Length: 488
Image 1 (cartoon, rainbow, N blue to C red):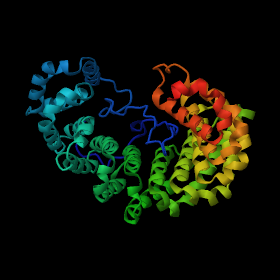
Image 2 (cartoon, rainbow, N blue to C red):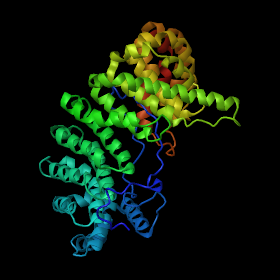
Image 3 (cartoon, one colour):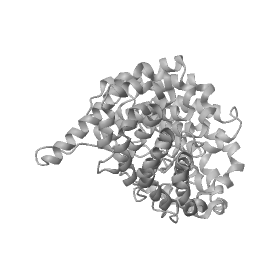
């Protein structure tokens, strides 16, 4: 089944499309404080080459077991694996060679240090395998190379990064859908590792990604959005050039216009546009008004449907709040990217009223995204936020609950941003928030079951306490003894 070579023209069936779930925006003083933010997911898993999310077969189990063994025994495993691996990787039979490439990827995380001496020989061999005549070899090679992307980027760019990038971009335009998917995912990983190292090649990269819009079927189109969004996150404002904008925006806006408000394909597209808007900054201005208005409408429609459902649950279905969350996150991206240029759009809309409702929603992810938007609007156009501060601050105070760590984190960040703008006028709100922040900063380490990095969280709370102390020293000073030790 997996050995079909050219299938790019065959439309995807519904069961080909995995369900997608939007993850709410989390901020951690990320705009000024050295780019600190949460990284609570690991996309380098072993499901790159199986058809469905439940396709847990013997091969995949074996690779996952190897991954675990490598992470437990580290380089001690290599004397047992390397003799076998050399034979597998250079085997004339493609099926055997393919299994060796999978093994090499499976041990990457655990045995990275011990593998470094062999990588100058192995990486060029793998780059050659990207052109193998067998689609399954090409696809698994994409994944394995992504597992070594960190090392590739640490070397001089012309040695491995440039040839790897060139070949991966060719595979993004492969005639096999599985290879397209693997290449797109691998390239997204490379983007995260390489960041601004990719700037000299942006025209070539964009040319390829934009051309893929015309080739891809439904499933891979969703992965393409992720690759474009990750590129925007990685190169940032370097994307803000007229020639790049002219290449990138027309196909994205075309897809945007085609999708209906209730189409779940909006999720990855909105996520992608959020990253693009943040990166393009003023370059996104020609596109911002319809995008902004649609996001506000999505939030409004979802809230209205939720009210109907709450009043008459038998008559009205509960809304999918992911539409609202992803719209709030794109509005955050617009506010961060456009800065003061968003002021007129905010003035002409009811977004602050809608945000007030979202901040009190029962669903933590809705509150999390609304607090991120509050922080970004505070920075971009505080003149519109200020009249609502008396309503917003008590809600922020009640959400300083570390049981919902990402909600608490975003509320803390928003309080810090508001304090910078309010200055001495923050005095009356100090009692609402300072005690909770001091209590949180004094808590012992959060259990490992929480995904977020505790150190990053504590830094976030520390920065906000510092901001409160800066604008209202008289109110914060009496509590100094209670937070000075963990603060330092």
